[in-house]
Length: 568
Image 1 (cartoon, rainbow, N blue to C red):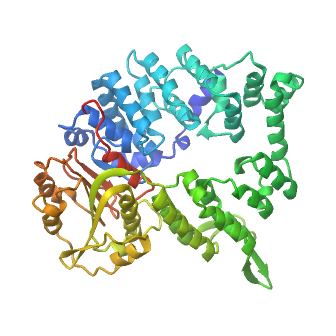
Image 2 (tube, rainbow, N blue to C red; image 1 turned 90 degrees about the vertical axis):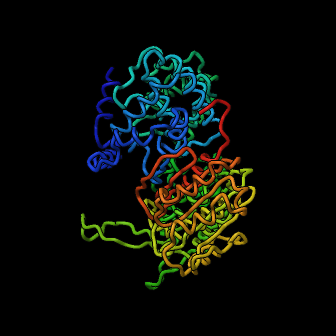
Image 3 (spheres, rainbow, N blue to C red; image 1 turned 120 degrees about the vertical axis):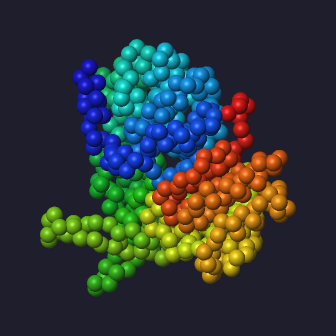
């Protein structure tokens, strides 16, 4: 009970929810007005609304790129509307749609499915069915922790009864002891929710010595585990593993630490701060580091690679070479599954980001400094982006026509993506989709006419072509005329994508209506890279994207997926 009160107290603390201020601001501005949402969604089937939410965290046809999931989950009006949707649907159909989205891996954010399942647990008399389904579906550590986070933090909180405890016990029983040991070693947490808390909540125990030792380590620490199982041969592997990890955490010798990392593959999460300032240690860590994690540490690595001689700054080229080799390694790009949009964002962030640092002589007086930028690392990041565009794509056997409206695009920064110019984002989206679809036609507006850019193969050349356009304001009727169903050049198109600074897709409804008799039933995507909000009529074949983030291309892929076996 003490643990439960502790968890409740933290979950009610506003600082635990990083989206709290954004939710309050959204409610004051009326961004989520319940009546407007209900009116906008009128005529859209319940199944399609649920599929939209599972795909890109919204029941409407608008995807607000870069908005945190918790912003929507904790918004009162949005939460009420979603709970009403679940009440109106049959639980069997809800779970079937969830399973389909999870199997196709088209949910843009990992938080969405755990949140929806936690809301299903709040439905009357459906908790046993949903918990059993959750146990089967959510096998990954992060999904499991997220599910319980939303169960215990969002009101009304789900009670930790025998059903929940049994579900937690069965989840750990389904995993190998060494896999659980890795989870505990990495200390993976979601907010305050980690495996140590989950093991306590579920009162997880085992008669097997290796699992018992593992659970004791997670909940009571290393000393207690050694005291109870030091001489137990069945727990020898687990005992050796955790003692070795603990010894590495306290290690201060760089050469020995580098050898240990190379042999035992320790991660940066269990490496102490002293070792993280040693280049020799980083050379060993870089050989196995995930690119998402590497991007987080890149400013520190750049700063670490600088040397000063007679007040002149120089680069440690050997260390820079190790960093660049990992950044643009094809194996690392494929293994990390880094999206082209994420590579683009990280490249621009590295080129532009400023960081605060406290001056040693004036404690408490932050000054803004700019970390030095290494051109070799910039080149490596560009190479990573090129490889991500070519390799990290989802093949789609459909035809696409993509239009780039170049008005003010080169002079605009993307919303919700720091420092990313809209023309660069447009080029990355275009080439990612081009490599993914079966057939792609790329058109750019220039002096009241469209120029075909389908032969462009690199994002830099495509970006230069966009910048070269000196066009006046593009009128919706000009674009609609080219994309109208009467135009035979686009009659075989399955997806139309229009990218621009700020698109009011209500102006293009005439073009959409012209394809109502089209047997291919094409879909339409409008990307407003420089706009925060978008308004217009809802339509089952329309997706409007505002802003830019690393999920844009995956959301478009999910939108054009073939409908599943049951009717939406």
